[in-house]
Amino acid sequence: MKLPIILAITITLLSAQPKEALLIGNSHYQHISNLNNPSTNLNRLKRTLEDLDFNVKIKTDLDDVHLEESIEVFAKRLARSRDTIGFLYYTGHGCQVAHQGYLLPTNVDSQDRLKVKHHALNINEMIERLKDAGNRVNMFFLDACRDVPTSTKGGSKGLGQIKNTPKGTLVVYATKAGEVAEDNSDFINSIIKSIKEPNQNIRNLPYSISDRFTQMSTSQMPIFSAVGIPKVVFSSCSLSPQKDLVGKWYIKDKMGKTIIFNDDHSVKIVQKDRVLDDFFSIGGKVTWELDENKEPMHLDLVINSNSEKKTIKILMIVKFIGKDKLQIQMGKPPSTRPIAFSKSSNKILVRQ
Image (tube, rainbow, N blue to C red; front, side, top):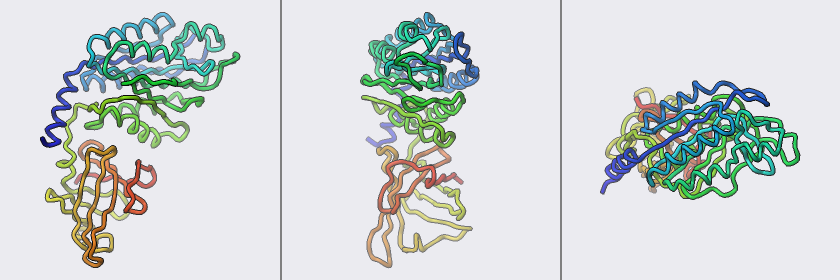
C-alpha cells in the first residue's frame, strides 16, 4: 500500500475521533498583579481548534472552586471515549512551592504557602486526574510561569514541573523550570501557527512550537515532556510530500536561485533564467530522494559527478510550511545531516 493512501486513512481515523479542548485564562487576581486580558487570544485558539473538529470550552478568571470544577468536568468529557484526544491550555499566574508546580486561581494569595498548597491547582495532581479519564492522548500547554511573590519558606521563582509524565501525555511549558515567562502572545501564537501546519503530528508539535517561538523571543525557551505519544496527525489538512515537493521553488537568499524538483526525481538549479550545469562546482546529473517517514523529513541530493566519477550525497532536512513554503537546511559539511533546524543557517523556499 502506498504511503499517501496510508496517510489518508490516518487522517480519516483521526477526524472521526472525539477531540475535546479546555482553554483557561486567568488575568484578574485579588491578591497579586493582574495580567493582560487573554480573551482575544483564547478565541483565536478556539477557532483554530474548532477548524480541526475539537469541541472547545473557554473558562476565564476562575477562583479555586471553579478551577477545580472545570478540571473535573473536562475529565468527564475525556472519559466518554478511549479514543478521545484531549487539549488543555492555561494562561495565568503560576508558582512553585517545595518543587511542586501550581496554577493559581484568582482568589489565592501566592505568598501564603498553606493556601497555595490547599487551594491552588497542583499540576501533578491535575495531570494524574486527567490521566485517570483513560483516553488515548492528552496535551497540556502551560503559559503560567509568571513572576509572582512566593515569600514563604519553600517558595521559589518560576513554575515547578512534573517529574513523572504519564503515558500518552504531552506537556509543553512556556519556559524552563525556575524561569519567568513574559506576559505576551508569543507562546500562544507559536501554538496556533504550529497546529495549523498541514499534516502536523502530535509528536512533532512541541518541536514546531519551539522553532517558531525562538524566532520571536530570545528571553525564554519552551520545554516539553512527552511519554508514549502515538504518531497521529494533528491537522486535518492533506499533504503528500513526495508529490508536493515537485515543482519550482525560489530560494530566498542573496543569490536568488530557483531549484526545480521534477517528478522523474531529476533536479535543476536556475539563476536568472540560466540553468546551472555545474552544480556545486562538481558537474553531473543530480537527483532527489525524500524520506517522509523521518522527523524532520530527510531530503538528499544525489550527484553523479562527471569529473570525479563518483556519487556524492548532499544531506538535508526539510519541512513543509503549508503547501507553498519549504524550510530546508543543509549539513555542515554537506555530507553530514543536521539534526534540527538552526535559525541562522536554514533557508526558506517559496513555490513559484
